[in-house]
Length: 229
Image 1 (cartoon, rainbow, N blue to C red):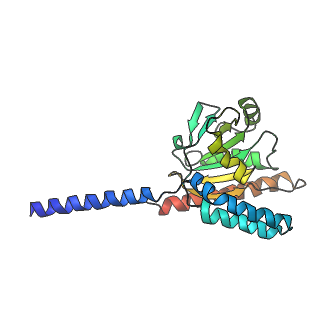
Image 2: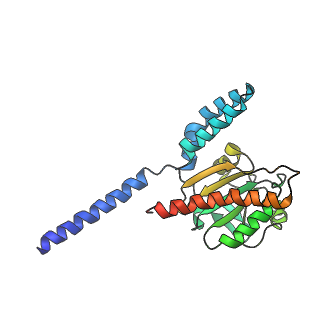
Image 3: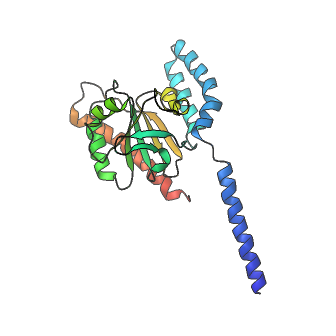
């Protein structure tokens, strides 16, 4: 009887290990998907834009994201953190919402106040991150708009030795872009940041931005509630 139980225990353990290994083997990374599929899609998108078929181009771009990017896993990119120097994507254990900018790209009306408010409310659950494509001096100057609950990262492409890989984040999807990443680094969404009309009242603009980011938070929570990682 003891031998039978021991055998069952061994077989069960081996089965679980084999399952874990299989899951790890099928994990596809963000960079792999870009290298494999981006060029063919961007040619089609650019052709549609030249033909002024902008809606079709937008739909094709969204299809590319849903088919090849969502569900991939974010690479462990090397970044710079204003608070602690060099850091990596894997250093962040909580789910992440990354909003990317450059020093010349001004956040839309209401976005800064929305990010500050949501970072204060959700910082124990989610890392709200601002990623600047710029040098430390410019990133630090622009970071003053955000409160201490917002994580500020930057990438200086002139000095980052991983630039050939990490530039995929910038040059594939442009600026400003939001990346929604679960705690296991699975990419749940990539989309252009909301853009409010310039004339919109500030209160309404802030509300629009809050609603947009809260949709990302909802997606992260839904994934966490159903995931077994």
